[in-house]
Structures are given as C-alpha cells and as structure tokens.
Length: 539
Image 1 (cartoon, rainbow, N blue to C red):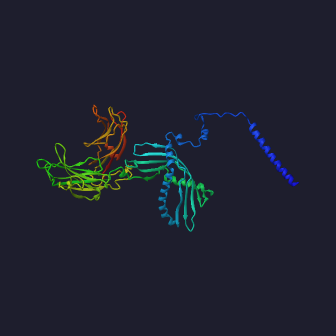
Image 2: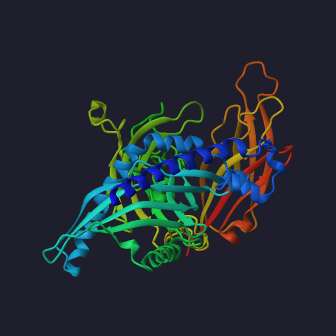
Image 3: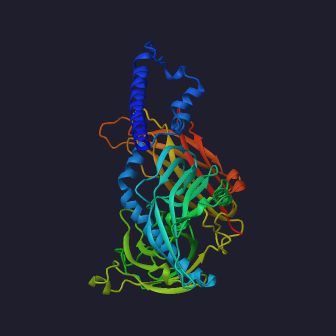
C-alpha cells in the first residue's frame, strides 16, 4: 500500500503542476489589461535631469563641455594600431624595468624577478574628448579625457628562498584627465623639446591582483586601502601644478640658441697677390660663421698694401661649436664692379680650447677643395687670434622659458653691453592693397635685417631670430619693424608696399629682460605682429 500511495502522490503532483502552469499562462496572456498606453516620445531638450541621467549614464565630455572636441579619428587610429602599440609598449616597459629590478633585488634578498607574461590586452584606451589651448608662447597645451578598461595579463615571477610565487595583475581600469604640454616648439623634429604631464584631478584606478592564483583583493579592507593609496601617491607626484617632465630634445641645440661668443682679432695679412693694374691691392677681410644667416663682419680697407696691418677685433655669436666653423675671406676692394676674392680659409670651432686664445697663421686658398690643384699656388697668408668663450651654467639655462635665468654674454663683453635678441614669430590679418607677400624689415643702429618673404599669406609664421651685439644697454632706443610686401610680377604699378609698422621701446626689454607680445601694426586695419625680444646683459 505504501508504494501505491507514493506512486499516486507523484502522479497527482505532476498533474497538478501541469494544470497550474496552464492556468497561469492563461491568466498572463488573456486576463491582463489590453489597454496598453503608447509611451510618450519627447525631445531631449524637454527631459528633466533625472531622465537624462537614466538614458545617458555616461555622457561624453564633449557633450557636457562645448570647448572639448570629439576625437573619434584618434580612437579609430589607436584601435587599428593597438596590437602593434601593445607589443611596442610592453617591450619598452620590459627593457626599461629589468635593469632597475636587477639593481634593486639583491638588497631584498631576492634571487630573480622576471616577466612570465606581459601584455596590455586587446582593449585600447578610449578618448572621450580633448581640449586644446592656444597661447602666445611657443607651446601646445592639450587636455584629453580618456578611459581605459583593459584586460591585461601581467604575470611576474619572484624567486626567493627556494620558492617562486607569481604575482598577476588583471582587470585594469584607469580614468584620467591629464594636461599635456609640448614646449617649446622648435624647427627640429619632432618639433618640441619636452613633454610636461600633470593631472587636473585625482585619477580613478582599479585593478585585480592575484598571488599564485589567489585573489588578494578579496581580503577584507585591502581593496579600499590599495585604491586610496594609489590615488594619493599618484596625486602627490603629478596632480597639477606638479608635473612629470619628459625631455625629448636639447633646447639649446634644437632652437640653435647662442651658447657662447667667438672673439676674433684680425692682426695682419702677408704676401698678398697683386690684383690692380697698377701693381697693388686694396685688401679687406670678411668673417662669418658657417651655419649662420647673420651678415659677415668686415675689416677696414687698406689701400695699396700687400702686407696690411689691421689689429681689429670682432665678436660673433656661436650656436653650435661642434658644427660651426669660422670662414675667413680676403677681398680686393674695387670702387667700380665686383670685388675680387684673394683667398679663403676655414677654422672649425671644435679645434679651439674654450677660454684659451689661439693665434694662427693661415694660408689663403682658392677654395676649400683639398683636391683642387689651384690651392697649391701661394696667395698669401693671414694672421688671426681666436678665443671661444662659452656661456657658463649660471649664465645659460636649458629651460629657455625661465626668464630669471636668461643666457648672458661671457666675460670679455664690454661692461654694460650684451646681446639683443629679436625673434619674429608670426603675423596675423596682414593685408595689402595689391598683393600680400609679407616679410619683416628690422632697422636698428643703421643696420637693416629681413625675414624671408611668405608668398600669398595673410597669417605668416617666420620663427626667425636676429642678434645684435651692443656696447651698452639700449635703454633709450627704439627698434623699427616694418612689414612689407613685394611682388616680382611684371607690369605692377606698386611692386612694393607697406603692410604696417611698429616702433618698440627697448627700455622695456632691458628692464624686463624679455618681452613676447602681439603688437598692433600702425597704418594697418587689423594687422598684428608677434615679436619676442630678449636682453642678455653682461655680468
């Protein structure tokens, strides 16, 4: 009877279950209200804040902040490049950290630390938006906002005391908004000298850690402690205004800033050849540094003299003593026609010992080709004394933005004298009546210098530098700068016209050591000219 009762009970339970499901289905389908309301569709602008937050749990930063730009193209580029970037970044991490680890492990009695596996995973970071600042300085400032939910596999083996446990980092998440500054911009690839990185707010960092397969973060209290510790440590090092500085180029070489002065004394020439019909010559010497666009220095003309005595001194600005050389040329002056070249020679600056005068007697050659047989013919000699005086560390800083430590001329510069540096950066809204091919003309101390012309350009960028060696500070003087446009087209009634000018009071430059401003051009409707001036006084 017991077995029969159990079978009948089981059978009854099955029948009851089937009947219950059937009745429930009937009520669900047929008994519920048929008056289903059509949802109201409203524009986003009419939605309240809670509704918007429900629809958009993560609003992109370019939506919340109109001054941020979308960078979908960058995300697509990173997505396509990520497999290769992953390998390159991991290889860099491995080659950079391994020597540091080997140096530190002995003091902790660790035998070996090595990467068993190192990959950042298949998911690249995503940039939510980017803001770019424009300034009058030679720099680019960017503020990207990125999120990275990665699936890395970083497995490190640690061998110590006969054991080899492994530490694994997984499920990495990083949300950050850094400020990246590229400065100063230079005409040498990659076109900036250093990268400055700082965080505008505390980053969000989350990751998992496994020790020999066991999840360490599951230990009560450890997860929150590690998260806060990482945030605080990163903020203490890189939260703005603190920065991480990554040098890329030597600013002095990249911008070809003056690094010293070359003092040249032209003493005499001997046994020069006759160039004039009456059996004499009128010699003078020209001095110029190679790799430099500055005008040549000239001695006086010694009329009817084949053994002239000059004893004249000149100072030339040196920008790269390892590459530059002093070029000495002797000419025969002519009142009419072209001056005849009497000879040439070159002295590399790397052959000079800093601060030590060196007197040399140089043979004058036809040219600097060592295989030219014409150079075997005697053309006379010239005697010069050269002294290279590099700027000291106190006088010159590698951080060229540090105005309080601007480069200064070396000892030997006349007391109160120094270098006046003029950098023509760019023009803005320049417009001529007949043509717009702007160049800048500088007039100072009776000397005229020019930038190269920019053809058909209303917003030209020159980035050209000019220097003047002065005996005393120009406290009461002015520099005249004029933007001119020239055209070589035939038949023009106005082949040259002025686009505006400015007169800069140099007393402000001497007092402040450096100014960098955009000046409104006189006689121009909207034209501006950005000019940087520096005064590097002698000590």
